[in-house]
Amino acid sequence: MKQSQLFTKTRKEAPSDEVSKNAELLIRGGFINKEMAGVYSYLPLGLKVMKKIENIIREEMNAIGGQEIVMSSLQEKETWEPTNQWSDAEVDIWFKTKLKNDTELGLAVTHEAPITKMLKGFLNSYRDLPFSVYQFQTKFRNETRAKSGIMRTREFVMKDLYSFSKDEEQHLEFYEKCKQAYVNIFKRAGIGHLTYLTFASGGMFSKFSHEFQTITSAGEDIIYVDENKGIAINKEVYNDEVIESLGLSKESLVENKAVEVGNIFTLSTRFSDALDLTYQTEAGEKKSAFMGSYGIGPARLMGTVVEVLSDDKGIIWPESIAPFKVHLLSLGEDVEVIKSANEVYEELVKKNIEVLFDDRVGIMAGEKFADADLLGMPYRVVVSTRSLKENGVEVKKRTEEKGSVISREELIKVLTNKN
Ligand code: ATP
Ligand code: MG
Image (cartoon, rainbow, N blue to C red; front, side, top):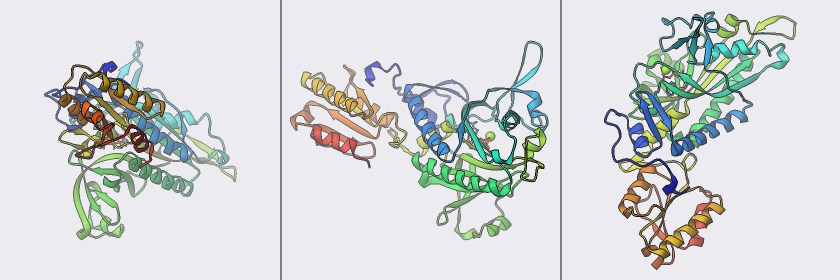
């Protein structure tokens, strides 16, 4: 893509009411636009990142047998009443609305009840189980605090997967697979080294739920990390008994601020009991399906990556989710430079290497460099009179201080090598 064609522009300043680093950098880079507090639009560069994150998640969910669907955002009051979750006292983040005939509706906070109800039309026998269903779907939550940029918004896409099993044993088998899939996802998205499987409160149905918490000063949670074992305990369940039951010791636990990037939850039969989602057992008896739910917020993940992988100049995208692998810069008005840069661009496009080409004229070199740092593509490739004098292009990784001039053939090799 040519930067001269990109309708978004970089900005020197973020809106003065923006307090989070992730939103500040993403707005300055033109990845997102702030519509109002806690509500953002995704612009071409930001949407590319989102789609890549979604695809990583989709691949991992498909690999454990998840079947993708999309459910509606408009939900019926009656669906949530059996579990008492229509009540504003129980769930205090609903956005509610009404039909013209005064029928009350809610905008999806989550989907446990609607999916349970929907599946009544499909589940019959133990032979149908286990299975799992997931979606990337817009949730609405009237969050009180919306000061964390795209990490906590009032409208966001969630990947929510729900599993349905015969019994606890079958459920746990899937639960473990999903846990591993989550480990893969956060690793592939570039934050595996900062993300810990965290024991958190399990609600009424299991001792613990598992959160995936990424250490960052931008996080709103407190966790206690055992670095060697690679696990953590959420402050909400942190006490001597829990520490001991997990085989940990207080001395090796370190307190950190962290953000919940995902969670996995045993629901047991809470929803299937309440909404009568049953199947026929081998013995011909009627039994409630045993359920689990598994959430990830792709935008929260994107915001977390920006928080933990950036420097004072801008974002540092991991290659797996960068909008483009390469930011190609053409410096100056020299016709040879422009010709050569265009040739490099065509060649990268032909080789299917994703490239953003800063072909803008009348923009100073310093400004182009600053934009490249802000936008954070993994590789910066510069064509200038200087690089042409050395018969090549200058290539520099975003994480490196200094680049080096190499030939155009060499460049293709560098960029097509998996690393
Ligand atoms: P939190 O405690 O941080 O509010 P939660 O426990 O409400 O999160 P879930 O309802 O389980 O989270 O949602 C599943 C996932 O969706 C979370 O792990 C997180 O990644 C994401 N998520 C939750 N709330 C938001 C939000 N307001 N904005 C963006 N992503 C969110
Ligand atoms: Mg919440």
